[in-house]
Length: 301
Figure 1 (cartoon, rainbow, N blue to C red):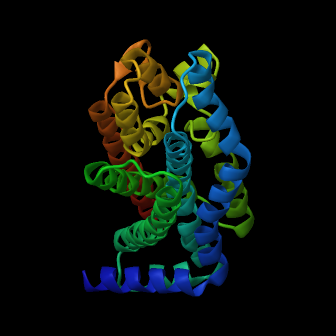
Figure 2 (cartoon, rainbow, N blue to C red):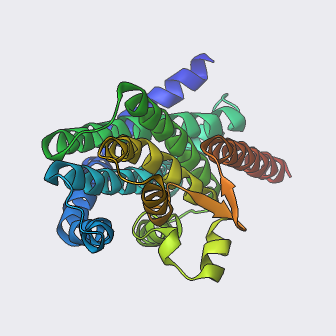
């Protein structure tokens, strides 16, 4: 375990020493927040306010801002927890291109320990940055409208940990066969551009066509987004209940922003969403271990 600890520390130090990778990972959530507030904030606001305007109901401005802010924050965290893990995992590719991995392979440390060190260091770095992003989001919410309870805040942070673990496992499998900087840049670009759409962070799954909704319900990222969205918005929904808004209206709102998900018309509870994410992480870790085992076996031939 001494060798594992030394490798993990080495990977973390190299990551934070590389200003390019570190700043890219850290700035991404902040850029997303600015872009979301600038371009998506008004869309989220209009979609929330319009049903109440048609009923002749005027909501307090703070409740409206709290709803929009919660949706923005949940979208940012759902995306950045995964995309940051891909940025953090690029160190393994850099080691291949620089020749450092070849030196590690001829050292007394086993290949399984080397693989585990990349996984742990990627998870650790991604978690640090994701918690920093969560702190920025919390500051933003505190200014515009904070409705989360202590339990909901704790649940959101726990879900950040789960999503970072998912992102680490997913990126470890996808990055594993890459061997050049060009390949890693291409994968990073595709993931950064596309993940937010397929997980329902940019636009709710409920706004897509029925056939696409059914497809997206097979992807674990959809459930991760819904979990964070529930924690970020449940406080606002509780406030709407205090304002005597009908339960049916609140339920429609929950459907519209993917707090409620339906798998072939069957409502998926938060417990089931968590189970899907945990199972997905377990499967991806298994795939990562298998890839490393096969690689080590081929290297001995």
